[in-house]
Image 1 (cartoon, rainbow, N blue to C red):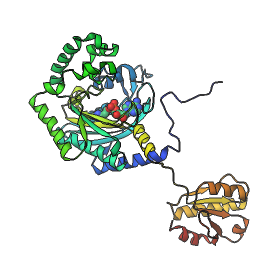
Image 2 (image 1 turned 90 degrees about the vertical axis):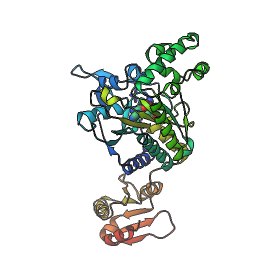
Image 3 (image 1 turned 60 degrees about the vertical axis):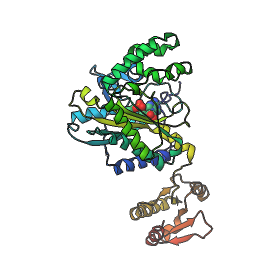
Image 4 (image 1 turned 45 degrees about the horizontal axis):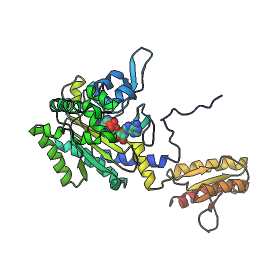
Length: 420
Ligand code: HAM
């Protein structure tokens, strides 16, 4: 029989990985709360139509990457490839968006059927943040500030850089789209197959091509920035001025267009060069038209999402984290000692809930249990045998320093261990 394995691109997070995840999740939660964001949790499965209408029919995500299937009612549903569509859907459905300001965050698995490689998976975790009801450039910058603070807390600020661009309004983009089509149509021989296809469907995405042979053509392409109206231009200038005055290191990348269709005005990505091809660790932008596109009253919106696996990879390349060893390792010798000892240990846990106490449930000789106690890294071994049962006492043996073992009555042991 062939052995069953995890689905390609869907990874197990093993116990040795978890300390990095705990650290990241804890810092993120605390950060989101400190900026006044509330958590929202939406289903991993949504109607396929939601993603088609929000992310866009002619994007890679919807065309090629979604896990889509018919459920038992014959309805087309998809595993969420991202979190923004679900957040907007939930906001509309529960009447939480119109004429209100909301700051939300979420964390959870997303699914894209991409070609797996380092930093790119088919199931991956995102932390996202979304602001509704505010259209000022300040709300765009708040998200960049917040993410910058996260990099500082995680001590990875020196290996990331912020790229920003503006996509203007949908009207401005339409005019620019035509300019781009005209320009690229003059040079069909320089376009690769993918770009020829995009010329008909989503020409802005051609600017995002990484194909080295096309770079000169892309460098010389007309720039959206040049065809923006005064209002959009001033808005972008304000974002850049705020970033400058807040000393957030950034660069304008006029070819940053993003792979999802709902964006307008500010878009941004935090990039690192330490992860090879998958350098974007956080990306987002404004999407003022999306709420109306999904059928509700227009509501300005801006947000980002970060790929937590990529951040964990950065953390792992910086520092070694491991789980703290237990404070105490319990060794129980013989049946009588097992019931007496477990009883005492449960009372210890009642009195000292923060104490990390691991019991050797494997049985065996003192020698073999003691070996495991030592290997666990615990500060103390708590040894209970027939003698201890007879005298209603427990032995505490320091494992990391050269001091003698002591015999305690339970109340005295609780008092002693309360200092740890
Ligand atoms: P996105 O650029 O598609 O945007 O994804 C955001 C981040 O998720 C990426 O920068 C990357 O770190 C991570 N990511 C994406 N795909 C993968 C993958 N296959 N494996 C590992 N990590 C991945 C969005 O999803 C938008 N919803 C962001 C947003 C929120 N815009 C406004 N609000």
